[in-house]
Amino acid sequence: MSKVKLRREGGVYILTMQYGENRFNPSSLGEINAALDEVERSEQAVLVTTGEEKFYTLGVDLEWMTGEGIDEIPEYIKELDKLYARLITFPMATAAAINGHTFGAGSLFALSHDYRVMRNDQGYFCFPEVDIRIPFSPVMREVLMSRLQGPAFRDVVLTGTRLKGEEAKKLGIVDHVVPESEVLDRAIACVSPLVDKDRTMTGDLKCMWYRRVLDALAED
Image (cartoon, rainbow, N blue to C red; front, side, top):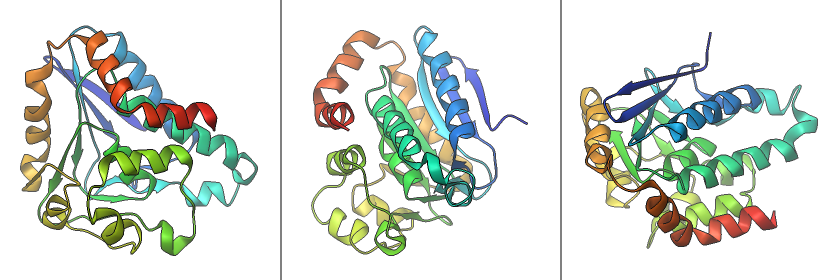
């Protein structure tokens, strides 16, 4: 079964991660990137990503990392970094429809989108790295610094606090908090007015604004 489903509704591509907790490993990263390749080849489109049931994505696949992937960790981190840099500079509007729990590397994945919509009842947004002792790469650091304003870094990253939707909105981490049944529609509404924006200009503007992310990727 494919780990990623991609469908198009008008000018909106919807990428759905559908493998349980939606943890990132080489297989799932490959499918996500293949889906992004297809989106990039299209004309006049925008992108929304989401998950299924109670998970958006729990980030790194710890079972794989501590098992068969233990010798591949450096290359694996580079692939995660490439994904974040690719998304944050994606040449079209993007929105994360956060349907459920979003942890660690998954939270960075969500932050790499232009817009974030989170459900208001269940699901946590969290950076547990301070508790599980996994360091951030330079690319991850720059993504965090580009998104977390004011006390958000202190109150979220330094504490590992699990935030619900309204708490994440107060800290400026997500843009909208809505009932579960409205998450996907609201995310689509965020980006659908931008379908006709020039892709070259959009990509250039993002590369300019997020230059530090790209510089960190190049230096890594």
